[in-house]
Image (tube, helix red, strand yellow):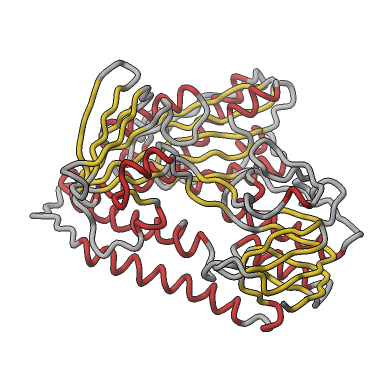
Length: 488
Protein backbone atom coordinates (compact mmCIF):
# COMPACT_ATOMS: atom_id res chain seq x y z
CA UNK A 1 0.00 0.00 0.00
CA UNK A 2 1.37 3.38 -1.01
CA UNK A 3 1.02 6.55 1.04
CA UNK A 4 0.31 10.05 -0.26
CA UNK A 5 0.64 13.29 1.67
CA UNK A 6 -1.32 16.19 0.14
CA UNK A 7 -2.74 19.53 1.17
CA UNK A 8 -6.09 18.94 -0.55
CA UNK A 9 -7.84 15.70 -1.53
CA UNK A 10 -10.92 15.98 -3.73
CA UNK A 11 -13.27 12.99 -3.93
CA UNK A 12 -15.00 13.00 -7.29
CA UNK A 13 -14.06 14.34 -10.74
CA UNK A 14 -17.43 15.67 -11.87
CA UNK A 15 -18.37 19.31 -12.39
CA UNK A 16 -17.93 20.23 -8.70
CA UNK A 17 -14.73 18.20 -8.31
CA UNK A 18 -13.08 19.58 -11.44
CA UNK A 19 -13.90 23.15 -10.43
CA UNK A 20 -12.67 22.51 -6.88
CA UNK A 21 -9.42 21.16 -8.32
CA UNK A 22 -8.76 24.29 -10.38
CA UNK A 23 -9.58 26.53 -7.42
CA UNK A 24 -7.42 24.61 -4.94
CA UNK A 25 -4.45 24.61 -7.34
CA UNK A 26 -4.42 28.40 -7.22
CA UNK A 27 -3.07 27.98 -3.67
CA UNK A 28 -1.16 24.69 -3.67
CA UNK A 29 0.17 22.08 -6.07
CA UNK A 30 -0.17 19.32 -3.47
CA UNK A 31 -3.61 18.21 -4.69
CA UNK A 32 -5.07 14.83 -5.62
CA UNK A 33 -8.45 14.03 -7.20
CA UNK A 34 -9.84 10.57 -6.40
CA UNK A 35 -12.36 9.03 -8.81
CA UNK A 36 -13.73 5.48 -8.96
CA UNK A 37 -15.91 5.81 -12.06
CA UNK A 38 -15.37 6.88 -15.67
CA UNK A 39 -14.16 10.41 -16.24
CA UNK A 40 -16.77 12.72 -17.72
CA UNK A 41 -19.32 14.73 -15.77
CA UNK A 42 -22.92 13.66 -15.12
CA UNK A 43 -24.00 16.61 -17.27
CA UNK A 44 -21.93 15.58 -20.29
CA UNK A 45 -22.34 11.81 -20.03
CA UNK A 46 -25.92 11.11 -18.84
CA UNK A 47 -27.52 14.44 -17.93
CA UNK A 48 -27.88 17.89 -19.45
CA UNK A 49 -26.30 17.35 -22.84
CA UNK A 50 -27.65 13.96 -24.02
CA UNK A 51 -31.12 14.78 -22.70
CA UNK A 52 -31.15 18.06 -24.65
CA UNK A 53 -29.97 16.22 -27.75
CA UNK A 54 -32.94 13.85 -27.42
CA UNK A 55 -35.26 16.80 -26.78
CA UNK A 56 -33.90 18.60 -29.88
CA UNK A 57 -34.84 15.60 -32.03
CA UNK A 58 -38.29 15.52 -30.43
CA UNK A 59 -38.79 19.24 -31.07
CA UNK A 60 -37.88 18.78 -34.73
CA UNK A 61 -40.43 15.98 -35.10
CA UNK A 62 -43.09 17.96 -33.25
CA UNK A 63 -42.49 21.08 -35.36
CA UNK A 64 -42.79 19.09 -38.58
CA UNK A 65 -45.98 17.39 -37.40
CA UNK A 66 -47.52 20.75 -36.50
CA UNK A 67 -46.44 22.67 -39.60
CA UNK A 68 -49.93 22.46 -41.10
CA UNK A 69 -51.25 25.23 -38.83
CA UNK A 70 -48.93 27.63 -40.68
CA UNK A 71 -50.16 26.46 -44.07
CA UNK A 72 -47.04 24.37 -44.59
CA UNK A 73 -47.75 20.82 -45.78
CA UNK A 74 -45.62 17.94 -44.52
CA UNK A 75 -46.69 14.65 -46.06
CA UNK A 76 -45.31 12.33 -43.42
CA UNK A 77 -43.10 12.71 -40.36
CA UNK A 78 -40.88 9.66 -40.09
CA UNK A 79 -38.70 9.19 -37.02
CA UNK A 80 -35.66 6.97 -37.53
CA UNK A 81 -34.95 5.84 -33.98
CA UNK A 82 -31.50 4.48 -34.77
CA UNK A 83 -30.49 7.71 -36.47
CA UNK A 84 -31.81 9.72 -33.53
CA UNK A 85 -29.78 7.70 -31.05
CA UNK A 86 -26.66 7.78 -33.24
CA UNK A 87 -26.71 11.57 -33.16
CA UNK A 88 -27.45 11.66 -29.43
CA UNK A 89 -24.53 9.34 -28.69
CA UNK A 90 -22.14 10.89 -31.18
CA UNK A 91 -22.63 14.42 -29.88
CA UNK A 92 -22.70 13.15 -26.29
CA UNK A 93 -19.35 11.44 -26.79
CA UNK A 94 -17.96 14.66 -28.21
CA UNK A 95 -18.95 16.58 -25.07
CA UNK A 96 -17.61 13.83 -22.82
CA UNK A 97 -14.36 13.85 -24.79
CA UNK A 98 -13.76 17.49 -23.90
CA UNK A 99 -14.14 16.67 -20.21
CA UNK A 100 -11.91 13.59 -20.34
CA UNK A 101 -9.28 15.53 -22.26
CA UNK A 102 -9.27 18.21 -19.56
CA UNK A 103 -8.80 15.67 -16.76
CA UNK A 104 -6.10 13.78 -18.61
CA UNK A 105 -4.28 17.08 -19.03
CA UNK A 106 -3.75 17.25 -15.27
CA UNK A 107 -0.42 15.99 -13.89
CA UNK A 108 -0.56 12.23 -13.40
CA UNK A 109 0.32 12.64 -9.73
CA UNK A 110 -2.92 14.61 -9.28
CA UNK A 111 -5.12 11.71 -10.46
CA UNK A 112 -5.87 8.69 -8.29
CA UNK A 113 -8.25 5.91 -9.32
CA UNK A 114 -10.33 4.11 -6.70
CA UNK A 115 -13.03 4.49 -4.08
CA UNK A 116 -12.23 6.71 -1.11
CA UNK A 117 -13.33 6.16 2.48
CA UNK A 118 -12.53 8.28 5.53
CA UNK A 119 -10.39 6.77 8.27
CA UNK A 120 -10.61 10.07 10.11
CA UNK A 121 -11.14 13.70 9.13
CA UNK A 122 -7.61 13.94 7.67
CA UNK A 123 -7.05 10.40 6.36
CA UNK A 124 -8.55 8.50 3.43
CA UNK A 125 -8.16 4.90 2.31
CA UNK A 126 -8.54 4.34 -1.44
CA UNK A 127 -9.57 0.88 -2.68
CA UNK A 128 -9.98 -0.81 -6.06
CA UNK A 129 -13.18 -2.40 -7.33
CA UNK A 130 -12.56 -5.58 -5.31
CA UNK A 131 -12.25 -3.58 -2.09
CA UNK A 132 -8.46 -3.91 -1.81
CA UNK A 133 -6.98 -0.74 -0.28
CA UNK A 134 -4.04 0.34 -2.40
CA UNK A 135 -3.40 3.89 -1.17
CA UNK A 136 -3.62 5.79 2.09
CA UNK A 137 -3.99 9.54 1.63
CA UNK A 138 -3.07 11.96 4.40
CA UNK A 139 -4.90 15.17 3.48
CA UNK A 140 -4.81 18.49 5.24
CA UNK A 141 -8.28 19.18 3.81
CA UNK A 142 -10.81 17.15 1.82
CA UNK A 143 -13.55 18.22 -0.61
CA UNK A 144 -16.45 15.78 -1.02
CA UNK A 145 -17.75 16.11 -4.59
CA UNK A 146 -19.16 12.64 -5.14
CA UNK A 147 -22.32 13.62 -7.03
CA UNK A 148 -25.63 11.76 -6.90
CA UNK A 149 -27.39 8.72 -8.35
CA UNK A 150 -30.97 7.88 -9.37
CA UNK A 151 -33.34 6.66 -6.67
CA UNK A 152 -34.75 3.23 -7.56
CA UNK A 153 -37.30 1.71 -5.15
CA UNK A 154 -36.48 -1.91 -4.35
CA UNK A 155 -39.96 -3.09 -5.32
CA UNK A 156 -39.57 -1.66 -8.83
CA UNK A 157 -36.17 -3.28 -9.25
CA UNK A 158 -37.43 -6.67 -8.13
CA UNK A 159 -40.56 -6.55 -10.29
CA UNK A 160 -39.09 -5.11 -13.48
CA UNK A 161 -35.66 -6.74 -13.34
CA UNK A 162 -33.70 -6.14 -16.55
CA UNK A 163 -36.64 -4.13 -17.91
CA UNK A 164 -35.96 -1.31 -15.43
CA UNK A 165 -33.79 1.58 -16.62
CA UNK A 166 -32.72 4.97 -15.26
CA UNK A 167 -31.98 8.07 -17.30
CA UNK A 168 -28.32 7.01 -17.60
CA UNK A 169 -29.42 3.90 -19.51
CA UNK A 170 -31.69 5.72 -21.96
CA UNK A 171 -28.71 7.25 -23.75
CA UNK A 172 -27.16 3.82 -24.32
CA UNK A 173 -30.15 2.62 -26.40
CA UNK A 174 -29.30 1.81 -30.03
CA UNK A 175 -32.89 2.40 -31.07
CA UNK A 176 -36.03 3.97 -29.64
CA UNK A 177 -38.29 1.45 -27.87
CA UNK A 178 -41.95 0.92 -28.61
CA UNK A 179 -43.21 1.85 -25.13
CA UNK A 180 -41.97 3.20 -21.79
CA UNK A 181 -43.61 3.76 -18.40
CA UNK A 182 -41.95 6.81 -16.83
CA UNK A 183 -42.15 6.80 -13.05
CA UNK A 184 -41.71 10.28 -11.63
CA UNK A 185 -43.07 13.67 -12.70
CA UNK A 186 -40.07 15.79 -11.74
CA UNK A 187 -37.75 17.49 -14.19
CA UNK A 188 -36.01 14.35 -15.49
CA UNK A 189 -39.18 12.30 -15.84
CA UNK A 190 -41.13 15.08 -17.54
CA UNK A 191 -38.39 15.99 -20.03
CA UNK A 192 -37.71 12.39 -21.08
CA UNK A 193 -41.38 11.37 -21.18
CA UNK A 194 -42.35 14.23 -23.45
CA UNK A 195 -39.32 13.78 -25.72
CA UNK A 196 -39.93 10.04 -26.15
CA UNK A 197 -43.64 10.64 -26.74
CA UNK A 198 -42.92 13.15 -29.51
CA UNK A 199 -40.52 10.69 -31.11
CA UNK A 200 -43.30 8.14 -31.45
CA UNK A 201 -42.77 6.06 -28.31
CA UNK A 202 -45.92 5.08 -26.40
CA UNK A 203 -45.45 6.71 -23.00
CA UNK A 204 -47.37 7.15 -19.78
CA UNK A 205 -46.08 9.41 -17.02
CA UNK A 206 -46.82 8.28 -13.46
CA UNK A 207 -46.58 10.29 -10.25
CA UNK A 208 -47.41 9.51 -6.63
CA UNK A 209 -48.02 13.19 -5.97
CA UNK A 210 -50.22 15.62 -7.82
CA UNK A 211 -47.44 17.82 -9.17
CA UNK A 212 -45.86 18.00 -12.62
CA UNK A 213 -42.49 19.72 -12.70
CA UNK A 214 -41.00 22.00 -10.03
CA UNK A 215 -43.39 24.98 -10.06
CA UNK A 216 -44.63 25.82 -6.56
CA UNK A 217 -47.16 28.56 -7.34
CA UNK A 218 -50.52 26.74 -7.01
CA UNK A 219 -52.08 28.45 -10.02
CA UNK A 220 -49.09 27.72 -12.25
CA UNK A 221 -48.80 24.14 -11.00
CA UNK A 222 -52.46 23.57 -11.91
CA UNK A 223 -51.84 25.10 -15.33
CA UNK A 224 -48.77 22.88 -15.84
CA UNK A 225 -50.80 19.77 -15.05
CA UNK A 226 -53.48 20.83 -17.51
CA UNK A 227 -51.05 21.65 -20.34
CA UNK A 228 -49.01 18.47 -19.96
CA UNK A 229 -52.13 16.30 -19.73
CA UNK A 230 -53.40 17.65 -23.07
CA UNK A 231 -50.48 15.98 -24.83
CA UNK A 232 -49.10 13.26 -22.61
CA UNK A 233 -50.93 10.31 -20.99
CA UNK A 234 -50.68 11.10 -17.28
CA UNK A 235 -51.52 9.33 -14.04
CA UNK A 236 -51.11 11.53 -10.96
CA UNK A 237 -51.70 11.26 -7.22
CA UNK A 238 -51.44 7.48 -7.39
CA UNK A 239 -52.26 5.98 -4.00
CA UNK A 240 -51.72 2.52 -5.47
CA UNK A 241 -48.90 1.84 -7.92
CA UNK A 242 -48.01 -1.78 -8.61
CA UNK A 243 -45.32 -2.99 -10.99
CA UNK A 244 -45.16 -6.61 -12.09
CA UNK A 245 -43.50 -8.57 -14.90
CA UNK A 246 -45.53 -9.14 -18.05
CA UNK A 247 -45.56 -12.12 -20.38
CA UNK A 248 -43.78 -14.54 -18.11
CA UNK A 249 -40.65 -12.51 -17.44
CA UNK A 250 -39.13 -10.94 -20.56
CA UNK A 251 -42.33 -9.56 -22.00
CA UNK A 252 -41.94 -6.15 -20.42
CA UNK A 253 -43.65 -4.75 -17.35
CA UNK A 254 -47.25 -4.13 -16.38
CA UNK A 255 -48.13 -1.10 -14.28
CA UNK A 256 -51.39 -1.13 -12.33
CA UNK A 257 -52.37 2.21 -10.81
CA UNK A 258 -55.22 3.90 -9.00
CA UNK A 259 -55.13 7.68 -9.19
CA UNK A 260 -56.39 10.37 -6.83
CA UNK A 261 -59.89 10.11 -8.31
CA UNK A 262 -59.93 6.33 -7.67
CA UNK A 263 -59.68 5.57 -11.38
CA UNK A 264 -57.89 2.28 -12.01
CA UNK A 265 -55.57 1.88 -14.98
CA UNK A 266 -53.42 -1.00 -16.19
CA UNK A 267 -50.98 -0.90 -19.08
CA UNK A 268 -48.01 -2.96 -20.27
CA UNK A 269 -44.75 -1.44 -21.48
CA UNK A 270 -41.41 -2.60 -22.86
CA UNK A 271 -39.47 -0.60 -20.26
CA UNK A 272 -39.92 0.97 -16.85
CA UNK A 273 -37.94 4.22 -16.53
CA UNK A 274 -37.30 5.13 -12.88
CA UNK A 275 -37.13 8.92 -12.60
CA UNK A 276 -38.18 9.35 -8.98
CA UNK A 277 -35.36 11.67 -7.96
CA UNK A 278 -31.68 11.39 -7.10
CA UNK A 279 -29.76 10.64 -3.90
CA UNK A 280 -26.41 12.17 -2.92
CA UNK A 281 -23.49 9.72 -3.07
CA UNK A 282 -22.37 10.12 0.53
CA UNK A 283 -23.12 6.67 1.91
CA UNK A 284 -20.06 4.42 2.02
CA UNK A 285 -17.65 7.32 2.53
CA UNK A 286 -17.12 6.54 6.20
CA UNK A 287 -18.37 9.97 7.25
CA UNK A 288 -19.06 8.59 10.72
CA UNK A 289 -15.29 8.58 11.24
CA UNK A 290 -14.90 12.30 10.55
CA UNK A 291 -16.77 13.73 13.53
CA UNK A 292 -18.81 16.04 11.29
CA UNK A 293 -22.56 16.44 11.81
CA UNK A 294 -24.92 14.80 9.30
CA UNK A 295 -28.57 15.40 8.50
CA UNK A 296 -31.22 12.66 8.51
CA UNK A 297 -30.21 11.60 4.99
CA UNK A 298 -26.55 11.28 5.97
CA UNK A 299 -25.53 14.47 4.13
CA UNK A 300 -22.88 16.61 5.89
CA UNK A 301 -24.22 19.78 7.48
CA UNK A 302 -22.27 22.67 5.98
CA UNK A 303 -22.16 26.41 5.38
CA UNK A 304 -23.19 26.97 1.77
CA UNK A 305 -21.22 30.25 1.71
CA UNK A 306 -17.92 28.49 2.45
CA UNK A 307 -18.58 24.82 1.74
CA UNK A 308 -17.13 23.92 5.16
CA UNK A 309 -18.64 21.19 7.33
CA UNK A 310 -18.79 22.68 10.81
CA UNK A 311 -15.27 23.67 11.89
CA UNK A 312 -13.67 20.61 10.30
CA UNK A 313 -11.16 20.46 7.40
CA UNK A 314 -13.87 18.75 5.32
CA UNK A 315 -15.81 20.59 2.60
CA UNK A 316 -18.71 19.51 0.38
CA UNK A 317 -19.83 20.64 -3.09
CA UNK A 318 -22.17 19.77 -5.93
CA UNK A 319 -24.94 17.17 -5.80
CA UNK A 320 -23.30 15.62 -2.71
CA UNK A 321 -24.36 18.78 -0.84
CA UNK A 322 -28.01 17.95 -1.67
CA UNK A 323 -29.13 21.54 -2.22
CA UNK A 324 -29.75 22.56 -5.83
CA UNK A 325 -28.65 19.73 -8.16
CA UNK A 326 -27.83 21.96 -11.14
CA UNK A 327 -24.60 22.29 -13.09
CA UNK A 328 -24.02 25.99 -12.48
CA UNK A 329 -24.66 25.51 -8.76
CA UNK A 330 -22.23 22.56 -8.68
CA UNK A 331 -19.58 24.68 -10.39
CA UNK A 332 -20.11 27.54 -7.92
CA UNK A 333 -19.98 25.19 -4.94
CA UNK A 334 -16.85 23.50 -6.27
CA UNK A 335 -15.18 26.88 -6.73
CA UNK A 336 -16.08 27.97 -3.19
CA UNK A 337 -15.10 24.68 -1.53
CA UNK A 338 -11.89 24.28 -3.54
CA UNK A 339 -10.78 27.84 -2.93
CA UNK A 340 -11.35 27.60 0.82
CA UNK A 341 -9.74 24.16 1.05
CA UNK A 342 -6.74 25.51 -0.81
CA UNK A 343 -6.34 28.68 1.28
CA UNK A 344 -7.16 26.97 4.61
CA UNK A 345 -7.34 28.22 7.36
CA UNK A 346 -7.98 31.62 5.74
CA UNK A 347 -11.63 30.95 4.84
CA UNK A 348 -13.58 33.38 2.67
CA UNK A 349 -17.36 33.76 2.71
CA UNK A 350 -18.64 33.87 -0.86
CA UNK A 351 -22.05 35.31 -1.77
CA UNK A 352 -24.24 32.94 -3.79
CA UNK A 353 -25.91 33.81 -7.04
CA UNK A 354 -29.65 34.26 -7.37
CA UNK A 355 -31.38 30.90 -7.92
CA UNK A 356 -32.27 29.91 -11.49
CA UNK A 357 -33.81 26.63 -12.64
CA UNK A 358 -35.13 25.73 -16.10
CA UNK A 359 -37.12 22.72 -17.35
CA UNK A 360 -36.74 21.97 -21.07
CA UNK A 361 -40.27 20.69 -21.48
CA UNK A 362 -42.62 22.28 -24.02
CA UNK A 363 -43.74 24.74 -22.91
CA UNK A 364 -40.65 25.34 -20.83
CA UNK A 365 -40.79 26.02 -17.09
CA UNK A 366 -38.53 28.19 -14.98
CA UNK A 367 -38.06 29.52 -11.46
CA UNK A 368 -35.90 32.64 -11.06
CA UNK A 369 -35.00 34.19 -7.72
CA UNK A 370 -37.21 33.12 -4.83
CA UNK A 371 -40.03 30.72 -5.59
CA UNK A 372 -43.62 31.20 -4.47
CA UNK A 373 -43.18 28.46 -1.85
CA UNK A 374 -39.95 30.00 -0.52
CA UNK A 375 -41.59 33.40 -0.15
CA UNK A 376 -44.54 31.90 1.72
CA UNK A 377 -42.24 29.87 4.00
CA UNK A 378 -40.13 32.95 4.75
CA UNK A 379 -43.24 34.97 5.61
CA UNK A 380 -42.21 37.69 3.16
CA UNK A 381 -45.03 40.16 2.37
CA UNK A 382 -45.22 40.14 -1.42
CA UNK A 383 -47.51 40.93 -4.33
CA UNK A 384 -47.96 38.96 -7.54
CA UNK A 385 -48.20 40.16 -11.13
CA UNK A 386 -49.45 37.81 -13.84
CA UNK A 387 -49.69 37.44 -17.58
CA UNK A 388 -51.17 34.71 -19.76
CA UNK A 389 -49.45 33.80 -23.00
CA UNK A 390 -52.67 32.57 -24.60
CA UNK A 391 -53.17 35.90 -26.38
CA UNK A 392 -49.65 37.35 -26.19
CA UNK A 393 -48.73 38.78 -29.60
CA UNK A 394 -45.40 37.16 -30.45
CA UNK A 395 -46.44 33.86 -28.86
CA UNK A 396 -49.49 33.67 -31.13
CA UNK A 397 -47.39 34.54 -34.18
CA UNK A 398 -45.11 31.55 -33.63
CA UNK A 399 -47.92 29.24 -32.50
CA UNK A 400 -46.61 28.76 -28.96
CA UNK A 401 -49.31 30.68 -27.14
CA UNK A 402 -49.90 28.74 -23.94
CA UNK A 403 -48.75 29.16 -20.37
CA UNK A 404 -48.37 32.02 -17.90
CA UNK A 405 -45.79 34.01 -15.95
CA UNK A 406 -46.08 35.12 -12.31
CA UNK A 407 -43.68 37.74 -10.93
CA UNK A 408 -43.26 38.57 -7.23
CA UNK A 409 -42.12 41.74 -5.47
CA UNK A 410 -41.82 42.90 -1.87
CA UNK A 411 -44.64 44.97 -0.47
CA UNK A 412 -43.48 48.42 0.57
CA UNK A 413 -40.12 48.52 -1.20
CA UNK A 414 -41.23 47.31 -4.64
CA UNK A 415 -38.07 45.18 -4.84
CA UNK A 416 -38.32 42.33 -7.31
CA UNK A 417 -37.99 38.96 -5.53
CA UNK A 418 -38.59 36.18 -8.03
CA UNK A 419 -40.77 34.55 -10.67
CA UNK A 420 -42.24 31.27 -11.83
CA UNK A 421 -43.32 30.49 -15.37
CA UNK A 422 -44.56 27.90 -17.80
CA UNK A 423 -44.50 29.20 -21.34
CA UNK A 424 -42.46 30.07 -24.42
CA UNK A 425 -38.81 31.17 -24.07
CA UNK A 426 -38.80 30.52 -20.33
CA UNK A 427 -35.07 29.69 -20.46
CA UNK A 428 -34.35 33.24 -21.67
CA UNK A 429 -36.83 35.14 -19.49
CA UNK A 430 -35.50 33.20 -16.50
CA UNK A 431 -32.05 34.63 -17.06
CA UNK A 432 -33.31 38.21 -17.28
CA UNK A 433 -35.34 37.80 -14.11
CA UNK A 434 -32.62 36.08 -12.09
CA UNK A 435 -30.26 38.92 -13.00
CA UNK A 436 -32.83 41.46 -11.77
CA UNK A 437 -33.29 39.49 -8.54
CA UNK A 438 -29.54 39.37 -7.95
CA UNK A 439 -29.12 43.10 -8.59
CA UNK A 440 -32.02 43.93 -6.30
CA UNK A 441 -33.93 45.81 -9.01
CA UNK A 442 -37.25 47.40 -8.21
CA UNK A 443 -40.24 46.73 -10.42
CA UNK A 444 -40.11 50.32 -11.62
CA UNK A 445 -36.46 49.95 -12.65
CA UNK A 446 -37.38 46.86 -14.63
CA UNK A 447 -40.25 48.69 -16.34
CA UNK A 448 -37.91 51.56 -17.21
CA UNK A 449 -35.81 49.11 -19.28
CA UNK A 450 -36.34 48.82 -23.07
CA UNK A 451 -38.73 46.28 -24.55
CA UNK A 452 -38.70 45.62 -28.30
CA UNK A 453 -41.81 44.84 -30.35
CA UNK A 454 -43.08 42.25 -31.12
CA UNK A 455 -41.27 39.89 -28.73
CA UNK A 456 -42.22 37.45 -25.98
CA UNK A 457 -40.54 39.75 -23.45
CA UNK A 458 -43.48 42.12 -23.87
CA UNK A 459 -45.45 39.54 -21.89
CA UNK A 460 -43.00 40.10 -19.04
CA UNK A 461 -43.69 43.84 -19.26
CA UNK A 462 -47.42 43.16 -18.97
CA UNK A 463 -46.82 41.06 -15.83
CA UNK A 464 -44.59 43.76 -14.32
CA UNK A 465 -47.22 46.44 -14.95
CA UNK A 466 -49.80 44.27 -13.23
CA UNK A 467 -47.37 43.73 -10.35
CA UNK A 468 -46.77 47.48 -9.99
CA UNK A 469 -50.50 48.06 -9.68
CA UNK A 470 -50.80 45.25 -7.11
CA UNK A 471 -48.01 46.90 -5.10
CA UNK A 472 -50.07 50.14 -5.15
CA UNK A 473 -46.92 51.98 -6.18
CA UNK A 474 -48.48 53.51 -9.30
CA UNK A 475 -50.37 54.91 -10.83
CA UNK A 476 -49.12 52.87 -13.75
CA UNK A 477 -51.03 53.38 -17.00
CA UNK A 478 -52.34 50.26 -18.67
CA UNK A 479 -50.59 50.44 -22.03
CA UNK A 480 -51.69 47.93 -24.59
CA UNK A 481 -50.56 47.29 -28.14
CA UNK A 482 -53.68 47.79 -30.22
CA UNK A 483 -52.20 45.62 -32.97
CA UNK A 484 -51.31 42.65 -30.80
CA UNK A 485 -53.88 42.09 -28.07
CA UNK A 486 -53.92 42.09 -24.27
CA UNK A 487 -50.72 40.15 -23.58
CA UNK A 488 -48.46 42.16 -25.87
